[in-house]
Amino acid sequence: MEVLNAMTRLAVIGAGSMGAQIAQQAALGGMDVTLQDQEPSQLHKARQSHHGHLLRRVEKGKLSQEDADAAIDRVHTTTDLRAAVEHCDFVIEAVFEDVDIKRLVFRELDAAAPTQAVLASNSSTIGISTLADATRRPDRCVNMHFFYPVLVMDLVEIVRGPQTSDSTVARALAVAREMGRTAVVLHKEIDGFIVNRILHAATQEAYRLLDAGVASFEDIDTAVEKGLNWPMGPFRLGDLSGLDVTYNARRHMYRSTADERYKPSPQLEAKVKAGKLGRKTGEGWYRYEK
Ligand SMILES: NC(=O)c1ccc[n+]([C@@H]2O[C@H](COP(=O)([O-])OP(=O)(O)OC[C@H]3O[C@@H](n4cnc5c(N)ncnc54)[C@H](O)[C@@H]3O)[C@@H](O)[C@H]2O)c1
Image (cartoon, rainbow, N blue to C red; front, side, top):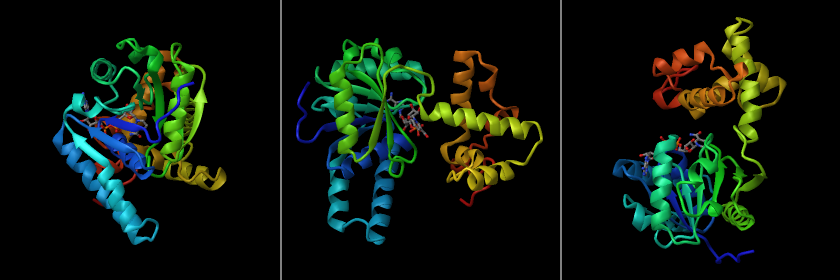
């Protein structure tokens, strides 16, 4: 088994909702991180959110000003993918959920990152074998699925593809640990991994109840929150993660399994088509103050 450096030099590709927080969490764990995005505005937004999150922690007395400053300094940003990865040990890709874009990014990463570097994808739905064969290092490719918001959610699902090596899984586990996150390993590539499979089953049932007029979405959320002790019901959670994300994941599951149980609810589809995507657009199932 390979021995890890004291601290992994990490590159995170894509500075959206997930990438920005993955980079920040890694920096809080003491790692040196380069955060890359093709859009300078996304990098600017990420930096601002880092300052905001850390300032709140300092104000609450959860973090010293010194540690906050150090975490900010550990994240370097660039629009240049080659520069981002040329000296790294480990890459986490978090670009748009689009197979063609991700394959392109993986091909570029393979050409630019050191041969021994691991290429991990944070995709929620795309198994690593679909991306690994765009590279010459399929044994060093792995899914590493974080949860939103990464700064709060402790879990990482590490999913090995048919060609992922034991040492790659060990390195992904070590990176999760360095970031202060708890990891589980899936030995098989499977749609939805563990958490989303279970969540989808429960959410799908909630939509079935809504579509059948059994109860309002508010009451279904209340039932789940009070009766199952989940911190959030499925509709409130959908608004938080983005109804487009929920919808696309469902459509992907439906297409890949042809299982009617995964067919997206017409009411969910209507929300997405109307651009009511949840918190990020100010309205989804619920309305939010800007
Ligand atoms: N949002 C969630 O709740 C969630 C949870 C777990 C996993 N994921 C996965 O994380 C990934 C990112 O999701 P997100 O919600 O952060 O998306 P997002 O749309 O917020 O961010 C994607 C970022 O990728 C950048 N990007 C796109 N193409 C690029 C390229 N070629 N090179 C560099 N940057 C590029 C975009 O500019 C954008 O900043 C997806 O694969 C998604 O499935 C999302």
